[in-house]
Length: 109
Length: 278
Image (cartoon, rainbow over all chains, first blue to last red):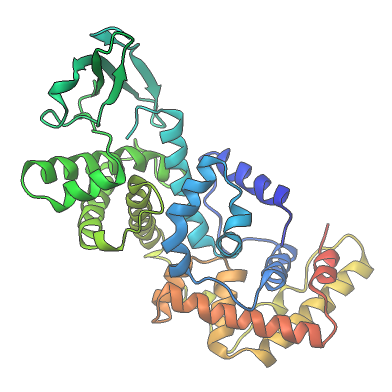
């Protein structure tokens, strides 16, 4: 598992990413693909949350993160799932953008 | 704070480059008026030195034309949505505004609000979200802000639809062939030097062999589609006649088998990764 700073770096990347990045499918170099596959295997844990289990906790996870809580300590299994599952990660990133917009404008509902 | 105070008008640039203008007006009312009839937040009670009790009232007008959204606590959202008549209608209208105002941010990396497809999609998502929220109200556990929970559902519906649209005309069959592995074919990769190229080639062949020996055909196809080809889980699931959750379990089991087998064969993931560093 990556250290906390890695996780924060990842979040920063998410939060400051522009509009130009729908991940291309099937166009990575062979080295990228091998890295991706082995990285996934390396991160694999005997027990992992499924997409449904993560979805059930995603609002709580996002709110906690927005409050500045240490979510990787509080919910390590959610975090691990988000690092592996692109679909859930995309949904989490989208939700985080909404919360950020709300936080930057307290008048927003 | 004095009665009738008007706070500075806020101009907030949205992602679309439009300006949303809101105006907050706050004032004080005698305590005995209470709250409720004009649908405002539970006002803060202010007790002045002379023991005159006043309540701070505030109203937000969205001058861009949308009606203002009343801020509610979780309990108030739930009780309004479970009530009938005016309270429920107004809560639903407010919830719709919450969803609609969040979507430009949620979808910013997918669809620009200036795209002609944006507004119809947002309306469809808002409608579907409201239906789902009402039918699943009992499942809200109060562990987050209610609006975060609602936005989570809206995001899920919106991205599912966008993925479906993005991939609907793309045949994944060529990318998910039965019986043939894609990993072995990756060996012809430019590497920093011939020795590294040979090492990479050898590692890829080993991984390919482990995948063929350890995984069922279905597991291998799923893992290659998602991990190697980076296709969306939801699309792959649908085309394999399953759902995203079951596909995740299938791939998790495949990863576990490969991890165990790699360990048995003395292939350390960290060392393999190092061999592919440029």
